[in-house]
Image 1 (cartoon, rainbow over the protein chains, first blue to last red):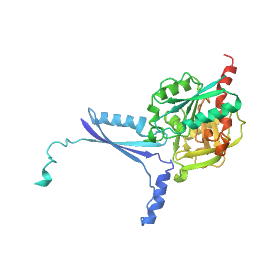
Image 2: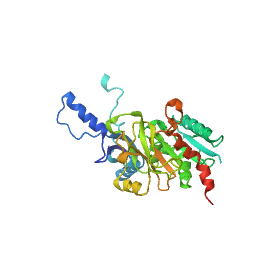
Image 3: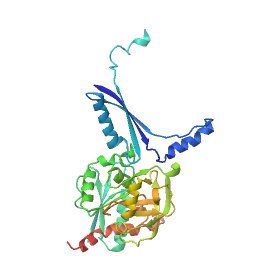
Image 4: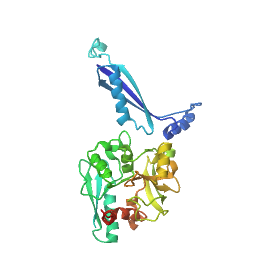
Length: 98
Length: 235
């Protein structure tokens, strides 16, 4: 089974985020007042082939631990959804022109 | 004794020739053939012929994902780990320091600089311990003026690790005027045994009067003395 995986890598609480701080300081110049706690992270999206959701999650979490995040300063949050078979029921080649 | 220095080149490394030239200059100043440096492409899997291994600065594997994160998958890194485990001197300069932390050979991580500025300047750095091969030829407490050239040099680790670094005399260099927000003014650290050292400043770029600074020569001289010091230790 195929699963859509998204892994959000974000700085751990308490770790200074100079990018977030810079963006936060810039926003009022555009008229966005009252914005606080801006944090910048990374989002990874990919699909994995796995027997079930638990296996897909375990694989994504191990990837996060070993490569996608640096556990010294970052946390990873894994989100999993089963992939709908996009090839069934939609014919992209013709629809719009008819 | 001739000290052989291996300078590892990853795709994207760009300070390897600075290291080779610094070794040539400092070795020439001491006595001819005191040392020599060879480039080592990252696909090599043995480093046995060297006394010292240097991971120089640059952008290994483009610094994709995080600085140093992908370099750890280069075949040479297995050899670097074995070389370090056998007590060999491993020195990571700038991007090389980032590679050593990502590879788990040194603790902690290097974050983006405080203030989000790329730093390209010369800063005073104090030698805090002379128990490492890098600092063995200088006087403890000496303040050196060394070039820094980085965006991610802001050292960070957890409180327990910092306590250990302090207690075990593993903080090798400190900034006297912290330029990047680094925890406890750390510019360089070592592993427990002291044979693996990572530092953000570039001593190899301060070895030639032509470039305006020679304060790095004492650190390079420490590396050149590795073979002599090892020969002096009774087996």
